[in-house]
Image 1 (cartoon, rainbow over the protein chains, first blue to last red):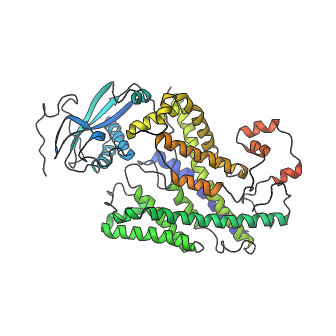
Image 2 (spheres, each protein chain N blue to C red; image 1 turned 180 degrees about the vertical axis):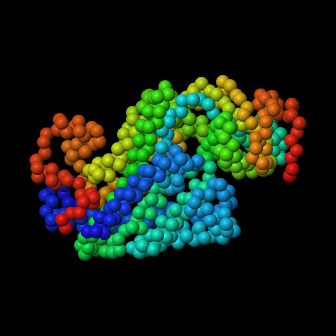
Image 3 (cartoon, rainbow over the protein chains, first blue to last red; image 1 turned 60 degrees about the vertical axis):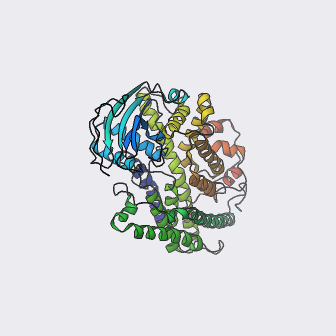
Length: 183
Length: 336
């Protein structure tokens, strides 16, 4: 039956396209897929480095945070869904993009993060945390072996990183002139 | 409903088997559209408070048009399409236009929901299945004994392709793990085959989300228990597509993959309820598998990798029994 064989060819081609477009999108597209075709490469790489990036909130229209507050612990509803995996990934992507000096990727990640702030503007700092390994990090609590400041931003401003000009371990307002904030 | 696996495949038996398979297929397809309607109904509160249109840089192509229309109009169109499509699919899936609307509604919903920084994947398989079902032939829903052979076989073929695309997603995931393992091995890093691989994944995931899971703490305290779980998951995933050609194993494999999703949630709070539904719908009572659970010999000999080893030690089957055990997946046209 011609119709049957023709349909069978088309469906086989579709399955082949699922594989080609899925795998192709993973490596060729900035978002790692050509929706809705996906590679399904989930949890393929075992996390072994205990490097993580975090977002420290310094200042918002609601006041200064001394010491700066990790975004997950921000009170007063500053961050919408702070435990969301989407936000967590955006923070990690921002950190990686800053280290790789990838302006496009960091702008995208910043846009995703700043959409979560319930007030504006917010001054925040991106830091790189190094732990022993993921297991130790979780078992011993979040105590990094080292912390490095990557950059600071003010939400809502042009997507261009401001130079990091203070140490994250020092009180935020002690060494820096206040940033002009427009409401 | 399917013929016993021990009866010879006479033309009459083939016809009865295929007709029974078609009847079951028709019911399962209708169940899929009812599930689509159920899912849509669970989202009604979201339709009341749709939120803002995502920024243009995040809009996926099916909903890129939202950037060019007023937000209220855009959301109204989307929700009418989703609700209308789901209702049409559930009430009138015998018509291609209804199935097309249902597929379009699912595509738009999935695109809107995933127009965020990182795309989620809970709806992708639903979109593919709905898209494939658009290609059911005219008359697919008629009485099984009266449907023309070409319509019957094309219907079964489309259904089988839905099964195949579901299993293909798991196989790609499994192959990705092999690829990742080669990469990490070359760089002297732990791989998915390492004894503590699952524990590392769980630890990373719980740290990322700053959350706890029901079984996560216990696994982290006993990381070695994750090793057989991880190896089993990799085996089930990697050879999932093979199972599309082995009806005798489909029920077992679906149970295993649903178990994988259950474990994923209770260890890492990752939930894929839609996938669990599709696995149950397509494989717990596959039209191409015998009603009864397979005999042990057939089960073992059909297993990927281990089947070849097991076959060396199992007694030979008689020719009549081998014919009766032949799978009836619709990749070749039967005599009737």
